[in-house]
Amino acid sequence: MKIVLVQTGRTTDKNISELADLYASRIKKYSGFEILTLPELKNAANMPVAEQKVREGLKILSSMSHDDYIILLDERGKEYRTVDFSMLLEKIFMFPKKRIVFIIGGPWGFSDEVYKRADLKMSLSQMTFPHQLVRLLFLEQLYRVFTIIKGDPYHHE
Image 1 (tube, rainbow, N blue to C red):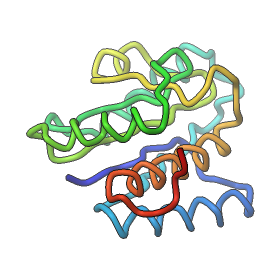
Image 2: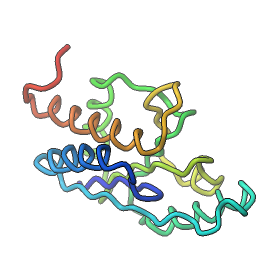
Image 3: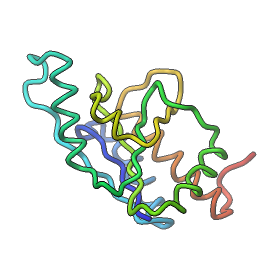
Image 4: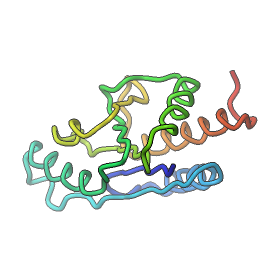
């Protein structure tokens, strides 16, 4: 099963981008993996938040297929310990889906339509992080999960 990370807007911090690329290349050793970066909305500063969420939501929805398992990275989602996340991912691998799609939304979160389409909402922390840092944190955790599943030495518990 392929894993896709959908993110809105590119990573502009060079240091974060380099580390994200490093973890993405490590993940690819374990699974088919792709990062899909959706372009940022134009003139978003002049747009009401509700409209931003709807427009961004349409872009996100257009990146999905009907047979994707959708996981939103959302501050109101369920928190998992890393080992529990690895067990969850192993279960999802058994589902008759083509892809697991993790989605990091924009600064205002997701539209109602995206929430309705999601199979799961997951939170990395109760703390608030910049979106670019969330990308890096998530990629490290996904890599860590694969090392747990495969029994490779990386995670210590």
